[in-house]
Length: 413
Image 1: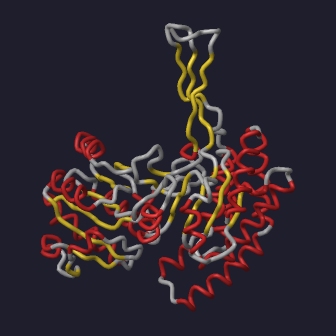
Image 2: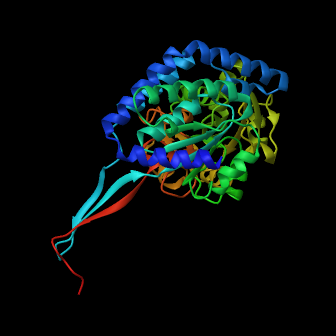
Image 3: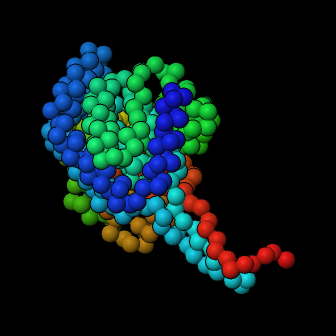
């Protein structure tokens, strides 16, 4: 692990000397290499899936782990989108002059070496590695044991592409052991070689990283995502958005977990929303007011308001207008993604200003909580903390800055 850190540091320095065109060339080569290696990647994934089923992983984990031709194509498209992004390194974020004539510029630079610790999604291997490359960072990847074969196949293709282009292949490294001690080594910072850690996974993983890391962490809590249906919501729009937000893919962190409905329209609109969800196979768990309107719902407990189901299960509460919705979200939201459905712009504006989450939406599905949908090409995760990166973490968010000061001979009195 220490040797891996040393090689990553050397690669990060080499990346810093490359041009934007060099990094783009490497990314395009990686996209082509992953496309060419698709049969090997899919074969490795089949082996991972067989082992995961034997271990009894749940449906949400299996969905995150699974690759098919369409998903591999999506990985390639994501890399190509990252290659097409403006290079973030060297951007002038601000520039000004002082009365003494000194010229100040705040300029974007790479973070350095980024350690990414993640669970079952093989696509994170490509997303994280290429976002780091785009932003001039070296990546040390530590995947979960369930995706190790798939991730190795992806990284082999990525490193081979970098080597063929004469670029530092150690810019992307995958930890070769599933021993958890390797995670502890990464969290220690590998003798100062790791600059930032990014965890992507469930609560237990993120909490361990945040507790034990000796280096800064860009982390996120689970996606306890809410959608509030206001009295002024368009009924069909509400039905369509809620069904998509919950059921498009239940295993992603942007999946809706709690539905809040204004009491002013709950009697007429909640049965319609519930019928659409139930017909699509979603289990509903409601509070007393919701169950009085739709008795077929199961009884929601306090635990349901704090549960990221990642499954076709939805908690439902009837609230007293916007104030009731804001109070529920303030208590239970994980600060990930929350949405409002309304045609009243003043109500929408108040919701968007009041909800302190990384992503807030008006009249749109919470499933848009995704870096690709934001135009970032991909993401390493959705950051919910209070450091420089918040929301989808793309290439721009994997930079920091330095100050470049230009003078003409000034000395300080």
